[in-house]
Image 1 (cartoon, rainbow, N blue to C red):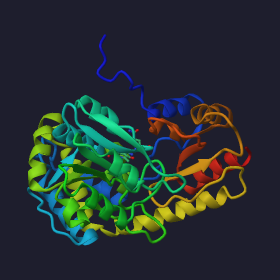
Image 2: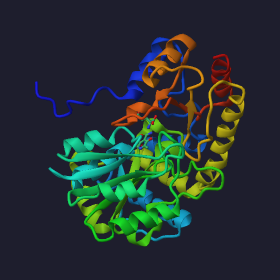
Image 3: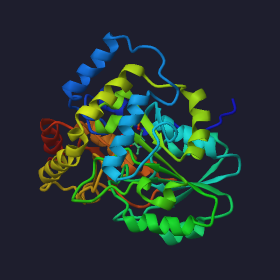
Length: 379
Ligand code: PMP
Ligand code: GLN
């Protein structure tokens, strides 16, 4: 049978989850918290289920939630957006990314992605008929090599996908990156898709440089985020896209036939919670920075080496002092033999470099982090 995605296998998150389950391993592979959604938010979901908010929501999302997002964007980034025309609620960030790519990428178009790249970008580009041009981030800081970017631009380049804070490396982009990007694409017909799902998980006093805050880039950008990361509810699969009216019109043409709309009671509950508890996302950087610090401290005496992550709830560990096996092999070995699951970083590259890195999720109760560190320190 002809495959439209001949080079795509099962996502590493499913592979490692299944292996972890099969071997009863501590699962620090797929990124999800093992602590609870805030009680008040759960009460609001219950409330909206009970009062009958159970039918289709409006296609772009309920106005209440779009309005609360407009308020939050103004509070966080000091900019105005139009809740009616510039914000759409989606089925997770995944749907927002997919819909954006289908809306703007066509046959023969090139899309620049930076490796290691989150794994849902390329299949969406391929299905749209486009081709990904993979540019490696520069180790050890995983910064963008702008010279290489400039040389990769062509008259086929249609879209650039950026992701900060970055999964899987935890790197964050700087203001100067945005200025450089803007200068390099200013005279070209190129859009930017900015994956900002970890916007509130950023450490060490770094500020999240949302594309929304860059007046020129914003005109050509679709910015994607997710409630799953911010509210410890990855299983709810609610995200959103923010883009100028002209881009959003095209985005919605795809969204309306991809999903049409997103779970109604969850949208109402999130709107209430955004209005009533803005401290939740304000406190998130400190909450996760403490987790990162704790996890890194617990590993100080291990044979793994690390550079503390600047954002996201992931920490890379370098195992070159422990094993010379390929990361895909070593990640499986750790799961099966040591009882701890992680994600091998090479799967996010089109041409994996010679590095030995595993990604661990530290969005876990301290007791889980302690168990993880105990295992890793014995290796
Ligand atoms: N982008 C990145 C970088 C992610 O890490 C994730 C999920 N963890 C997503 C997009 C997808 O988010 P969602 O679960 O809301 O679809
Ligand atoms: N984004 C999550 C991660 O990086 C995984 C989500 C998924 O399994 N699709 O771990």
